[in-house]
Amino acid sequence: MTWYRPVLAFACVAPLASGTSVAAQADPPTAASTRSVQASAADMLRLAETLTRNGQSEQAIRLFEMLARDPDRDVRSEALFRHAQLLEAGGRNQAAAVMLRRILDGNPGASAVRLRLATVLQKLGDEDNALRQLRALGSADLPLSVARFVDRLSAVLQASKPFGVQVELAMAPDSNINRASRSDSLGTVFGDFELDQRAESGVGAAVRGVAQVRRPIAEDLILSARAGVDANLYRDKNFNDISFDLAAGPEWRTGRSRLTAEAGVGHQWFAMKPYQRNIRLAGSATRAIGSASQSRIDVAARWTNNRINDLQDGRGVSVRARFERALSPQSLVSIFAGADRFKARDDAYSTRSYSAGIAFYREVGRMTLTAGGEIGRLKADERLAILPQARQDRLTRFHFGAVFRQLTVAGFAPLTRLVVERNKSNVEFYDYKRTRTEFGISRAF
Image 1 (cartoon, rainbow, N blue to C red):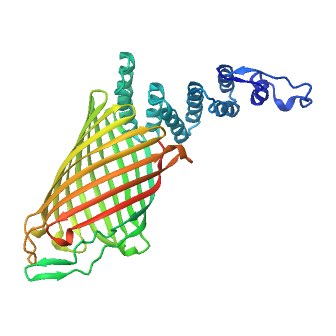
Image 2: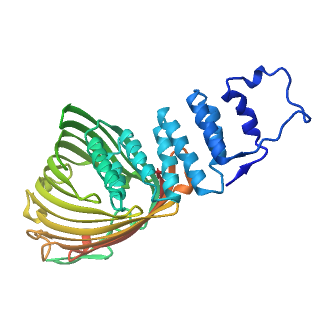
Image 3: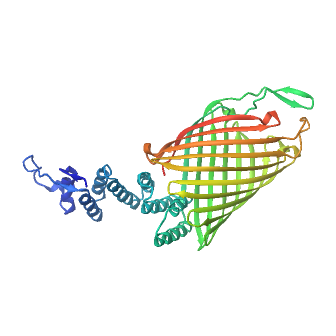
């Protein structure tokens, strides 16, 4: 056990614990009158608890900050946990989430801390990550009473009314920002045509954000609305790619399942000019499987208006399935597969596509590492009149990333992400490869 001797902070706050103000002392302590006080970490925690009950939170926080540097992990964790409780009680949920995440970085098996973090994330409007924390907890060997409590908490979280905003900012060097062909020529029925398009590299700014509000309108019925933006911005505005999406709809809760339906509109600009807009209707079904797994199915129908080429106007349907499982409190795996059918005004732009992939998440110390891969296939119904054959693509994409929470500032932590993409196509115009690296900031929890 660590002993604090002498402890100046203890000497300063001890009078406060008994209701006496330091400023009320007639004379400052002299070297001869100063007493050496010896106190254990447990004594300091008890004192901080007394200060908290007496409404002297600032003094308690100073003690927690000092104890957070204790060499004993249990003492550090207890101080951080109580500090997080104070922050949460004061409405500083983001700071509380960062502190709870710091405890789990050093002690991922701390069940009470993970439960608290799930609750704080829900208050921040991040239900998906809150439920992910509960699934991570469910992967551990919990006593039956605790497991039942986790189930009840999961139901409570899903029935709440959060409002949340998520933002990610990054600088993104890219070897092929315009997805230009790797070929110098395009094969046509009239022979090879020379392509003057070349791959452009550059450093852009990636901005992603989602705002969501959800309001209960009945016991098991919630109305939700969200707005999202995804933008890649470059010095040369001719390569800017900006998408905006707005959607709203109801959510139903039934047992361990969640059903959603929504109507949405989207708009995309390329080179700062309108590129396409769409209207869509979508639905999803999410179901918890056991305490550590979740499955989800999404279906959607869309109507697209291409502002550049009317022949690409059309309607499409898609389906996507995802299975997510917490392997342990520190690791998670996600598997998905999907299919899409788009019927354009011109059959040469009508396509069928399929995709599948897997992603891994692993917490290592105060870092979260991610890795994954995806494959996709696309085939057009007919060929363009100028081309010898209908388009067929084979896409391969790999991604690797890391969030460094040890460098957290104001609730945000640095992130880095590498994406390697290769699209092989029998039509040279669509054949490309690119490597994209992102350096930015993301939430630290």
